[in-house]
Length: 352
Image (cartoon, rainbow, N blue to C red):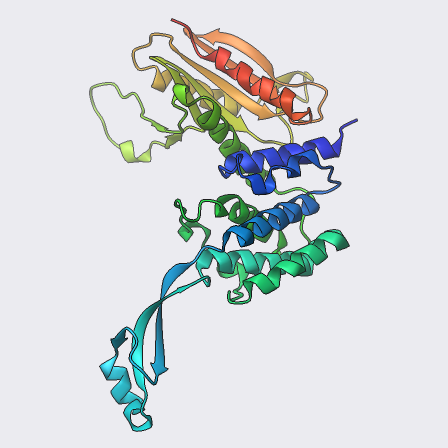
């Protein structure tokens, strides 16, 4: 029987790696607690992370303001001053920059905390803890969560600690905004496969970035190996975007992460279980185009998140000189065992 608390704690670990916050002290104790559902995990991350952020000081930035003032501040907006006849009242319109906490990062944080309090299925204790955070964000405006442009929230040294918090906020918004078809506003117990797939890919990449920088982990595009001769319609070739490539000298391992409800397909006529054919064709194509010199120094691995099915991927073959495989990462195991599975992946890098 699967221990859901272990699975949820591992989802936390995935969050922490994916959003480059694995060393953040503010949430370091979350992984040792037991959680019965994902809602409470997300709430606890926000509670701990936001409390820590408040103690160190909310991120502030210079924002442009335009106001009618009795004294000069910044630059006088002559046109607006004349148009508003402000001079007759002894006031002038000024443009100035003000150092305030009402930044897009804090607006997103406060708005999602408010959303989770209103609509999330969380314990009363955590609901109270979230409410207690709001007075510290009093100077921050509440905006519509649907209006938040997550890709426009940039991170640097001054606000890097927001990365995990706002990553969690984005996933909360995905689950809590009304469904277009039903109007339902309930946060799903587990995120959609698409959201979890993205998290899974980022988690794998950031794990190796942190623990194995010597392997130059990256997710580059692979170019198609095109023969000389008549060439047309190159723009119609699909992009080969990798999830992760690990390198040891000239030797490379291409990993394609898969987060599916079913990692094995069954032929209804023969009852034979096989790897998804499209996945296998994809990893084989990636490997053969990456191994331009046909030296056999590129391997490919389909890494599925393990499901509760009786049969799991366990493919390990050599195809046309390149090692190709498929296996499952068991996220239902304690974290030290999950890490051992990840470390074993480095053995798939071809040897000289």
